[in-house]
Image (cartoon, rainbow, N blue to C red; front, side):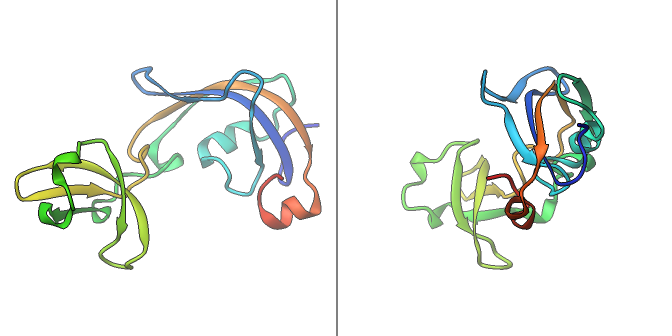
Length: 155
């Protein structure tokens, strides 16, 4: 069987940035499982896996456009430092929850910068703007069930 739409695929992987820093990896014996064609993984990796069989390896470099997207400046905002109950607890790189200015929906932000006046918050995906390098192997492939296909994810 070869990877194609509506098949449930298990992969062992390591994800690094372009400088070789490990960003993520599947744990030994616990592969990543996704439904192929349901946008469960980044498009560049999914395209690379198309047609592969169990046991085959992959090594692909994914541009931001094929990964988590470019950094969108509209998703970066400055909030007055006085908006936070205890600004002394804040640190760059910390993740906080808040409401977006435009939609008012609760979302996750990463603190990018803190000054005496403002905190710069970024709601872009943490891997947006990065060139990503995936390597690994295909561990298992099976037909997705009707329920999995309807949900768009494996159960």
